[in-house]
Length: 270
Image (cartoon, rainbow, N blue to C red; front, side):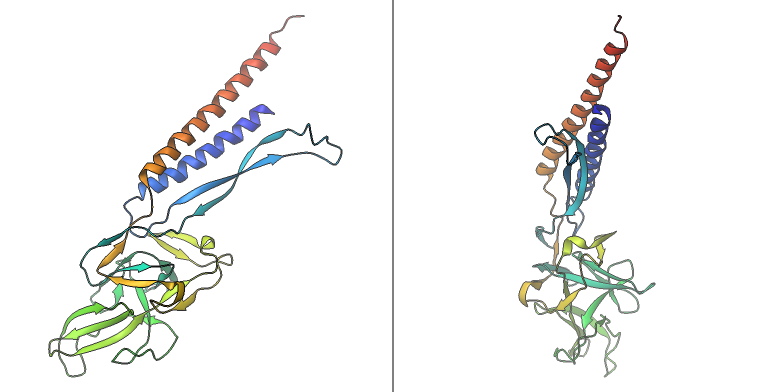
């Protein structure tokens, strides 16, 4: 039994090493949220077992849980670099598949068609507004900047306010609000499914997204010209890396010891 108990320990240590390595590899990824590995002991017994003599048979991976703590905010100066100072997520929709994603990485830019997107054709979602910034509906739409305004003036620049209003400026000096950034919140964000590129999708565990405006409740305020960095603490991860390595070595040593004992028993002469 000791062989299989230690083998489980080796597999668990390998999983822990993989999670820690993933965290370290993404220490410079904007909007990345670190994960931790949670373990549980395995105990087997029956109604007739003496509870004072019950022997454990190892451990198992119970869950790999993400930590959504706020990462450091870095000033960039770019108007379409956005950071959420709170619990909200930006919502994007794929221009290719129509799939909806949620992200903390607010590194957006304009494409040739005027869409505010993340570089992978995932378009930022906003609440519709009138030209002066009053929200006119709750159905989300793509943030789109017209190349010319109603008077025929060419696009000159874009800004995002603290309230989330995306304002396009034109060569004739006029400004037009094209939408207000929508922030999503979840009752159980730990249930979100990782999709890569700092994107998540909702699941039955996370629940559906609840949308709100920047600065309202737990959604958080919006910072323009800034990005949220990864919340990975390198020093903490290196300590975890050493611990996981020692755990792996200890389980390997236990297997070696069990092998030696078995070999001794086999070689006994009567």
